[in-house]
Length: 196
Image 1 (spheres, rainbow, N blue to C red):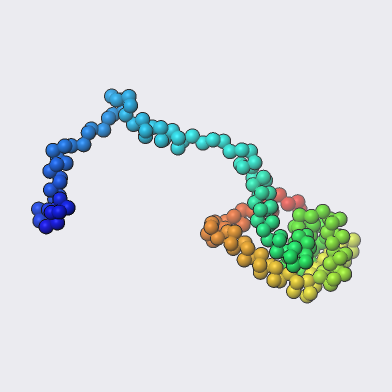
Image 2 (image 1 turned 135 degrees about the horizontal axis):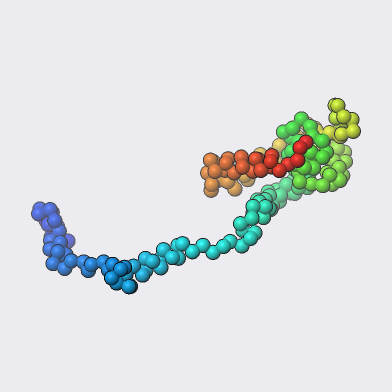
């Protein structure tokens, strides 16, 4: 039965096993008695254990964050600019869309922009009825900003596209790791942002 393959299942063992028993495998050399024993294994282990130091910018958190932000944001900024908004205008509207109002200084912090730049852009955006400025309820020296219904409409589609882009970026890492990354980044921001 199946003798053409050199197997005799009736007896329960391959016929060729007799040949194997007549010619046992060569004993494995022992490292202590054979200097060449395990050379390939030791070399493999050595290669696995060697870790070349990474270049500074590839192992420095601020540099990694800056590179990742530039690469990922740059992909979506093309969509933003095609919509007719500047990157900072997009950031302003996206920030205000989920907040009842922010001071100009707070808006500058979140959008990573200089305050004079934000003030200048707000002039233009207010003229288009995208945002509205108003005095702080308890300190009239502070100018607050809120989004208008038109501004919310303008930015809504871009925000949906931004979330789709984010999902594509994070998809290789899985939902759990992606959420852990966000939690870590939010904590870093919380710890290093000044009061107010």
